[in-house]
Length: 217
Length: 265
Image 1 (cartoon, rainbow over the protein chains, first blue to last red):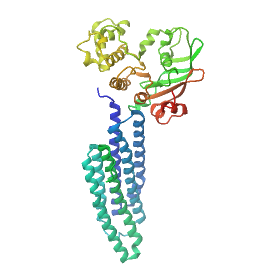
Image 2: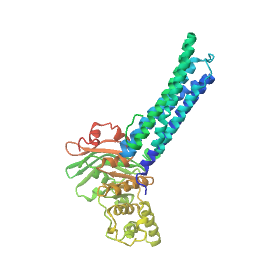
Image 3: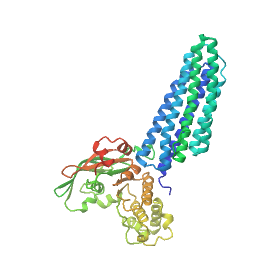
Image 4: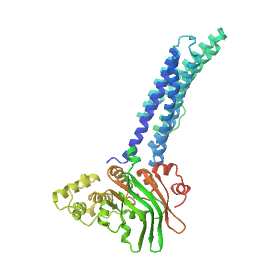
């Protein structure tokens, strides 16, 4: 007889939920960049609306964690998993907010002609989303090594951000009339850069689950 | 706790309304109104002496065995009063079985411990009894351990297995409700968790009401929790009755919070 099977089932459910909310946030980021690229205002509006689903799921998962803490007295690794989930969903929910922010910028830009072809911004988004997926896989598989490796990749996103920033700065210096347009794109790049930072926070939590140690990476 | 269907079972199987219980002149319970939901685990918690066991024993009239007990108010099982004059108490206790604090198998072999109830209720064919014995032992996950030793004395089993046997014995007469009075308190932690796991399994078919001093156990195993405490004259009253996760995460009454967080009791 498996002892405490219901508790373990609930614990697995919560971890599955983390994958679901992670999938929702990464999809939101990718769609927000698609909307920006294609100046698809309908899609942008939809992303703004859909953020509520991510927020609601986050509260739902939080509620389940509280219930498990209250009723099941989790300890050791299982307690760390639940504590990590509470932290991870906060980070993921913020990534969803960044996607919403990018969608709002797209709406602000409206149908103005693009300042420049978008190449590095989508690359940043792809990199951040890939890191997010892998960080959640590392969480589920309790793989500290993978989590450490993903943290290192934050530099790729930071470098892309610096590159975009300098490029846009140069454009603005040449033509001050497009400052407001260029600034909006800097915001987008900044949101993506912050998303990747959030992923490194997730990785720190993964390492905490496995080692029990809080490490700033 | 298991899933939504179990968490909010709809049908009420036992309903008490304004129940007072007296031992002679002493009032042990006051104005208890409580609906027990079918196919749920209900935990009765509260400090020692608040009337938890007394309340549990109301549900199958075990208090009748104590002279000078008087019960007022109504107690309905499936809508029918169990305190009516025409109620067959033996038949009632068949429907509402009980497991006690200490394992108390009869001093006979394992097989007969299970078969004795059905035999008493008229099943005489050995083949039929053997099916019941196997079903009940399987239901409590004891079958594999004892199937080759059914004629061994039940008293030779470990305490945990004896308690499982007592649960199997209660199941043998196909009860609707199983009352468990501190049924894990004499057991080691592993046997305790095993019985808790079993409760979650059995609750798919049966209604379970437990009395426990162990807050953690009540939190782990029950769907609904009832908190009782004594008033100044020592009569037990129902302070709060709610889904277990609410009782333990956000109790409405300050006295409940004080008790479950260990401030008194």
